[in-house]
Image (cartoon, rainbow, N blue to C red; front, side):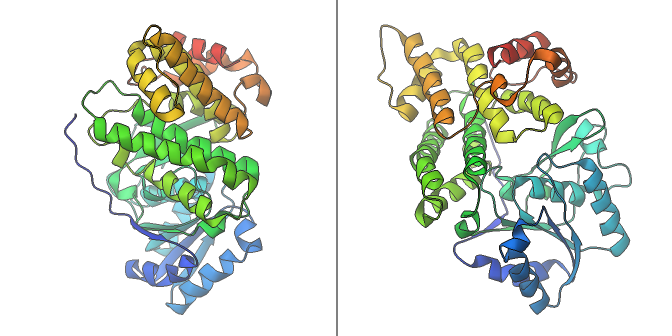
Amino acid sequence: MQDFVFDNHTKIIFGKDQEQVVGQESISYGKKLLLHYGGGSIKNSGLYDRVVESLHEQGVEIFELGGVKPNPRVSLVREGVELCKKNNIDFILAVGGGSVIDSAKAIAAGCKYDGDVWDFFTGKAVVTDSLPLGVVLTIPAAGSESSTGSVITNEEGSYKRATGHISLRPRFAILNPVLSYTLPAYQTACGITDMISHILERYFTNDRNVELTDRLCEATLRTIINNADTVIQDPTNYDARAEIMWSGTIAHNDLLNTGRIGDWGSHDIEHEISGIYDIAHGAGLAIVFPAWMKYVYKQDVNRFVQFANRVWDVEIDLNNLEKTALAGIKKTEQFFKSIGMPVKLEEVNIDDKHFDEMASKGTERGPVGNFVKLYEDDVRQIFNLAK
């Protein structure tokens, strides 16, 4: 087990109608607030009105910036940074899913920096401080509501890149499973795939003697898998929605990677796909992860056997461990298909036209992944496996 420091200061406020306390939670951080959100869904559902009312009850002055898209754009982040600096904003409130939260985090970092916020995502600059922010979560998926990371897309060059810092961890996150009732089945499935992928990135490690976090990863995976069909078929099932929402947070709040070094190659590879083709992140991960597994499983067949047995109940064939490992990969792929996810690039109308470009861009700062270091040709081969 690796040495570690676990520091997660996000206050989780979980349950029905909890968005009503957003005003009293926000006022602790100042009187001027940027309300950041996506499209019209929070207004159509009435959530926007409830949030604004709660903020006004506490005397908060609200500045708004909507329009966040999936795979959030740096152009809107720059607009948010300018708005916050101009109006001396004290606090940012993100109301939405991972894209809104990631965009809010980038704005929060940019407000404490004199240069271009994109510098943080290219490695030219490092985040050292940010404005405080809070979250009202509407889409369980990215886990950004209590993580330190932000992923942003630059339209110029179709680059999708990540940055992170502990100051970007939200001060509070309001999680009301009822707010996810109206999500379309496909968006729900994308979220489920995203949170599963966050766990898999941590699970496939070269570290030994990490039994506790192995078991925590496996339990969270099984919880998501056990409730996935219910939330898709019965979207207003509160108990199933609650299990999924809390699992999505646990999947990415850093608890599951304590004492271990995760991989993250699949995320880096997927960023190249959604950076160019603008597909849903979860859909891209459903395509990439099985291909990555097929490419790297021989690095540690025993870990893939453990995964197949403990997560998918595949009986271990002691005479053919490779067969067991491959069965677990197949089960993973079949699960993604069962919830309506694509598992091949051709299913989302992506051919090999940009494989060379994506492989080159994805590794331009060096190899990706930790379980197996992947270079340009490795990434290209994974794309070919995903065709």
